[in-house]
Length: 304
Image (tube, one colour):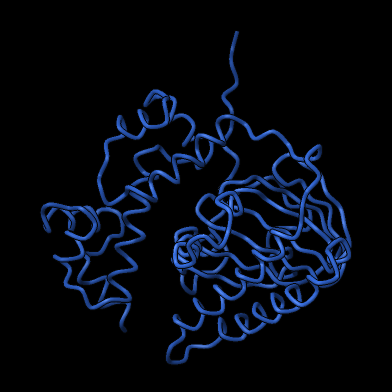
């Protein structure tokens, strides 16, 4: 008997697939309408394995499958999709609004700066709700969220001094208002789908990578902390992110290296040490192999 292999749900990296202006940007903005015109109004199942995504629809309607749960509603409405959560949707031609896509480590840094403010589970669960379903006292935060994203949209289209810092500040403001809305929105427990064991393990692996990518743990150590075999961890990562488990770790290291090279004046050799490389030459080979540029040239290219 021939066994058909399980196909990975496509991972869409917005900066690389849709917008080439800055393929590695931490915060990306686009209108829902333009994205729907590009990807289609009937968008098949996909995921964004290292990005959070927020949809703020201001007109039209949508039918959505979010992590196995089917929703439908009319704007104004909000969709919150954590990294890796599969989703697909169908929207009418007039449906439009804002779509904010933010790299997961950026969001986690914002929340680490606010210890004790939010429950640990807040960023793990997807959400869909219409504005009309929220308590009346949430209206101000919904309006402030839309206003923050609108300001971010204007800044995203500019190239002025302080651009990156302002995008991060506006993004954090948007996520604070979003978090208040998520806390106020209590989904019905009976409607909450069961999270698959593989997805749960993958999310836990991503959390471990976030906490330990500088420690250069072996895959055996990661698998041991998750109480699974290394082979199963690798299989899960290939199906969830279309990457082997080792590359999930390496992608996180590479992203941190890019950020430090772009936005800090730390010497290249010191960046290697900060990322847990015992030898600056090994860090340089690691970076060059994956980007095509030595770290020093990558830094210079980002300054031009």
